[in-house]
Length: 297
View 1 (spheres, helix red, strand yellow):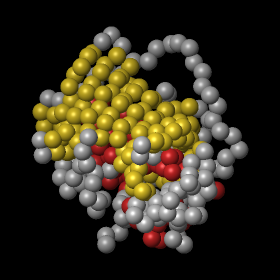
View 2 (cartoon, helix red, strand yellow; view 1 turned 90 degrees about the vertical axis):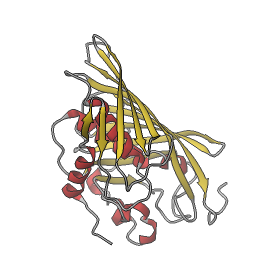
View 3 (cartoon, rainbow, N blue to C red; view 1 turned 120 degrees about the vertical axis):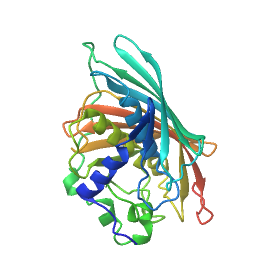
View 4 (cartoon, rainbow, N blue to C red; view 1 turned 135 degrees about the vertical axis):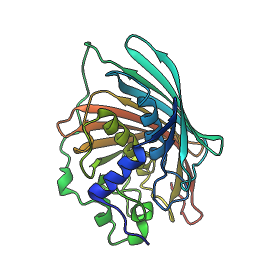
């Protein structure tokens, strides 16, 4: 098995994946990620789709929201085509629709809106207090050193995002994870990012899909894989409230207000280290119990 990329090498690899090739007006090709997984990671598709949309928007307009649906699993052995439709360029807003294609079929589609920004009302709920500093929490690979079989995909793919769970993660061994209403994770790019704000937003978009659905399991103390559940993202929405750098520590505070009919809803908020609310995320996912899993009350 090839050595797993970490740190700046992994970040540079992710930046390469997000560096799309423009092959025609509104048409881009996304390079495939060398991850050794059969399916394309949803955060990668969403991040690439946002890069494609952002490259068609002129001036200083920043993305403030995106709404996407995962339609089919992507094949990680093939590149993905991104077709961007210019829906509107107004005086202060631009709207784009991006469709991700493989083999002539849609695997993901997304609408994104860009805004110049303007003066107005401003407020924000405070960030959670009394949490341990990210540097005091071991990364997931160290937390699971005693259970290497639970590392799952983390043991096989590049790790451009440094993830520090506060409390147990969905990769804990079955029966060892406490049930928590809030799932809180410190995360950031595990290296330096360029100054381009669109890149920071796209890397956060990538990272937002890593742990959000885990908050549904957290309510029950449930885990992924054998002895737990398999999950698939169905849709994904993000709102970006303020500019930020995602190569600095960011708190991802997630909850799951409801789950039913095999689907779970997850909502998350991103805060910087000073407690400023940066972005919000919402996702619904399909969760199926594995044959080995015990009944979850």
